[in-house]
Length: 251
Length: 350
Image 1 (cartoon, rainbow over the protein chains, first blue to last red):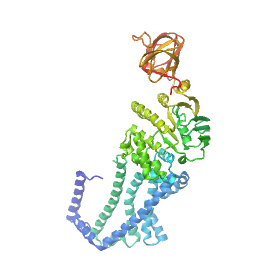
Image 2: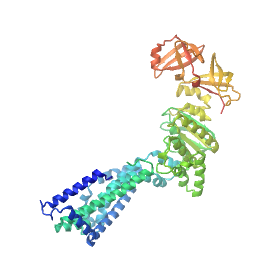
Image 3: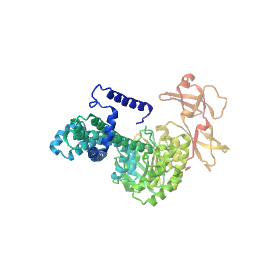
Image 4: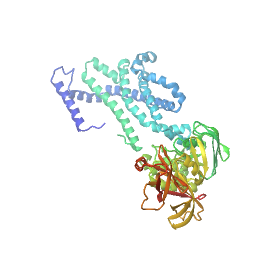
């Protein structure tokens, strides 16, 4: 995303409006704190051990769950693309699983797994893996079949074809799934923590809510959205770099 | 060097194909779109199912998987790997065979040097011109030192002059590597220029195999109508022209005496859409003959068959001219055969 002058003006106006409404005291400032106060809280939060601990716990859960989910999704997608039999047998099941909202599985998993560290990781795993399966599959299926044929006549075995041709050429579509799913992973982890756990950023917000610290709630939301966005940017950066290297116009 | 033989090869498109290609030969498969040319190559490469037998050096290879057949294949789409540099594309076959790095570099450098593309080694295929991409695809196929080279209309999307120079280069390289080659095309000129032998394929069947002049009648009856005249050179006018007598017609034809030492009987071919038809005698009278319209067939083309002193010429007249001239059977017309559209071939001159 490009931040240009116009978008910067809109952002600044938005923050200014927030500040003014907060300062006008229509509502008590503890219910609607102006932006400057939220910013101040945010800086304090960044320095507090309690917040950092909660943030790192959430970050760890997101990274573990997301990495496992992505790895599983890519592997499944590649295998499904490679074998017609596998694809025809598993595709309907995957399509069915894909439409289940992961959050709806939370109560069930709370019963099955219990309220422990595994729960958010499994939740994140589930929400990241299924869409990646589909994108990998469609990426691999869109590869010109002649490339595979040629690789075969040049002497490549199935496994070599997978990691020299299919995997790299599916990368753009895998990355575009990861880009979107990275933000989804944060959201899922966050909700799990709010509803089921007593640690992490979600729980941190829950405490702030119970003590009516609206400024902390707003600051946490900013932290969450920035975290999602950074993940998104990382994948977008990799995606456009890969494509540019191969001579495609990324935009 | 490897000889190839197909015995009773049949599948969803090919019908009982029998074909023998001697080792080191360049065989052109000529046929219209949908004739089964690509399928034939896929059969030889082991990429499609078939009934019958394929033999390399008299040994059946039907059970040999494609990656062990040692074939260099240049498909119509070229199928260059877009995520690899030119160097990695050419080196791919050697890399997946686990050859040592120094060997790979030596071979790749040698082949890319021969084709004059070594300077492009760090580029990605998308950034190359059409002609350069062709060369990369050919280099990639040759790098594995294949027993057989298969080329599927590789010069299709190129401009005329690039095609011509690539053809010459291909011929040179094929001789150098002494690799048995099958070249698929629908272009008659390409077939004549490249092929040691030509096999004409249509609707899954081989209709004729032989040198160009031998298969000309088959080409004319299946791929595109041609006026084929047998003649004898009576006079060489200068280095570029000669006079040929075919039946009772005297034609001035383009003739490069350097190419043919003792010209025997020659075959003259002219495409029917290149011959001009007049009601009144044109002012320039070279290769202009008076004749009588014998038949008119309207269809895909307006085909006019003109009798010139016993010889028949088929002429395709475009619709506008056809209606303007108001041609009828029995009319006297003048026919002009432009020199630059005449092709002459000498049997056994390869």
